[in-house]
Amino acid sequence: MNTTLSALKKKLYELQVRSKGLYTFEEYKDMRNVLQTLRMRFAAYEEWDLYQHATDLMVSMLFKNNWNGRLD
Image (cartoon, rainbow, N blue to C red; front, side, top):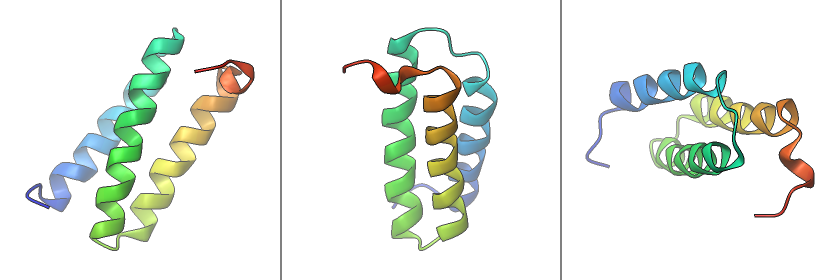
């Protein structure tokens, strides 16, 4: 928990902007892993709104690009 909450919020915003330009499955997997890490940090800070926002972003990426039928 060395990272400040404002830095985590900034990272979430950057990922949200970046998610609009995802084109490959590898990019999706990388983004998903980063978002899962962010979710754990938000949970540690008990920032449930930010946790939910990160989760929503993960789900929207999944359905937007129809990667839910592909295997890891």
